[in-house]
Image (cartoon, rainbow, N blue to C red; front, side, top):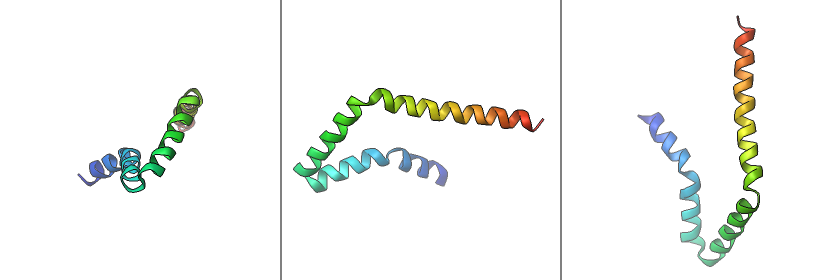
Length: 70
């Protein structure tokens, strides 16, 4: 049960952080969030490529280590 709560908390940290920044910071936070949004829109291909590369290297590493243990 604790693991599920930690998983949900970590998974929603970005959303909660953006919401808190907007509520606390007002217009300054809105401008910052707009810059972050524009950055992510401009570089979404690179962001996805890095994420997929990370997962691919992780899976490859697990596969190679699994073969080495046999």
